[in-house]
Length: 469
Image (cartoon, rainbow, N blue to C red; front, side, top):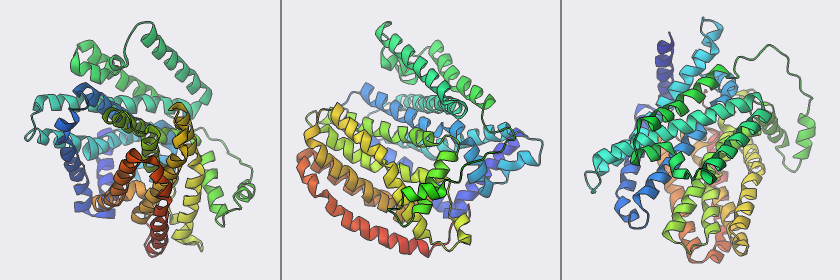
């Protein structure tokens, strides 16, 4: 029965996306990822003149751990996935109501399906791209395959550990704090008193250079044990109880009275507050882009040690902050609004305001990074750069994906168009930030075309038929 459910879920995921984009467009997405990986691999010999192979492999493992971290917050968003996303898109998710199948069995299959989904769409195409590149550059094919194996293990470790932590969070924030404190203490003890390096604790990376059965079994333990515990204590099957909330829509909307869309903004924050995980969803989902930003900063400092680090950090922080908009739209579709006299553009405008409010979190990160890097003299140019690239990236996200970026970006054509419009700006901002940071004081000029794109987006999505998901 369980295997049958998994097969049906995989078919359902395929049909959902192909019905939106067509077979070719959706199938072309992993091909595009593979081509991108192949092109990036062709530059490996050049990168090796600046970074060692060990540094590149270590960085790649960090990326895949962080990738797993973003996928691993199933325990945090489990009920929302079943109640909100799949309540409209899938009858399978609710089959436990009519068939002798437990919700944990359903969710286990959902977890396995998503792992297969991400491996096929992202990890395998990257692997094939790297392997294909070995035909043109002097890199051992076996070594590349082993590297890809370590990357998959890093992804699964990140997914499993954060799945475990997010499940704890769903039960008790205090318990999560205790676990994190214990983990931090153990980490510091291993490094300071036992002289165990961070690279040794990065087990897949360590096993690549010093393979052993003990490391392999420890990796398997880190993958399967936390996931098993999380599934046992998964907070999906809630006891019957009434949830009563004070009618705070009017009070909260009054706080947002500066916007004509105050009621919709208030709804966003009430949804966030009352849903499982609350702000934790923002924190967990933001770990990956922040980690990527740190990694890009590390690479640039390796390439150009004299670079103004905060400027590079601001550029990449701006581009990845768009993930906040993805979170705000991930579990909220336009379908419930179709019975009201509300335009799609109205909801988009309210989401933009909500995005700008939550982005204060990104701004605080920029301030802390500036202080920690001791580069306060560059803060104003960095701030201008961050705001401009963030708004520009948001405008392009809305133009190409509207209220469904987490879905429509799996359309290879839409994703390619987005990359082609954002990447050149990102490249120019990065180069200019390196040459003369004060030139970035003129960067707000880009807000003019961004504003034009947003206005065009409103007209576009008002004419578009909402997705039936």
